[in-house]
Image (cartoon, rainbow, N blue to C red; front, side, top):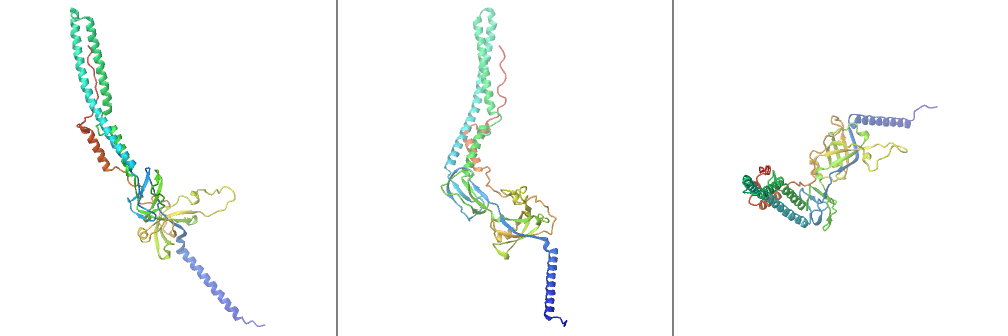
Length: 402
């Protein structure tokens, strides 16, 4: 029997050996690549663009008379978005101005009343002193019979009556002094309360013009011209697209070496592989997505199957790259985190470097402050708030006994 090897079998063995060598070399190469490079990167396709959605609401009731922005339009900070009918607010403003003027005049009358009471007390003190002198003269003449006892009793009654009237005037002065003590017309509580109501009315009038709190793109406009809106009614939203970020959902087994500050490479389905974004890991969520779900999983009941959880990781984008290639909220991204540098913290101490302003400032309006000062000056009379001295002490003391 011939033992000559079959050439076809030999060729097949060589082919299998070569294939096994190639596969072994590939596996060794992949293992070396993973050991030295691949294991230092964690990737996920479960990543999406997120951003602030600033709700535009009305702070005062009113009817919409004008819309100055619509969906997809860009707006700048402070731009007029919605205008409400200002008629009611203007009437309230005029009523508040009249109330302030009335309060100034009422306080002014308190100062005039105080001066009147001081003069009245001085007059009654003089009358009391004269009645006491008359009583003492009659008392010295009663022994000679020149004055009757009845006349002396009438003099004594007159003194008592004048004392009571003087004491009443002093108590009235004290009451008036308590209302104006330590204040001027401009700083009196009644005037300050009326001025506050005027500021409130001016604020309500200003809020009939709803301005954009941030620069961005209009989305979800639901308001229409002629609609009657209540405070807190959502009108539209503004999305600042120059300050978006990416929320990448990584499996829990991928988080072991992730730290704040690690670099991240991202690609968007919108631009394809030709555009690569660069970002920085700025924080890891406090829990998995299922932990904050509306209906969390009840793993303590029934049959249980382990499911690998995903944790949202926030990635800040390079502003210059974002400006060159704008993104939209909700777009899909692929994120790859370089986890070689593990010197960063596990928990972020601060995510946003600058706070996002969500409302226009409602601080003091110089024009309204000037209007308040003008109304006070027009109604405080010739004496003015600054000319009124502080009331000290009120009336005290009493005339001597007869």
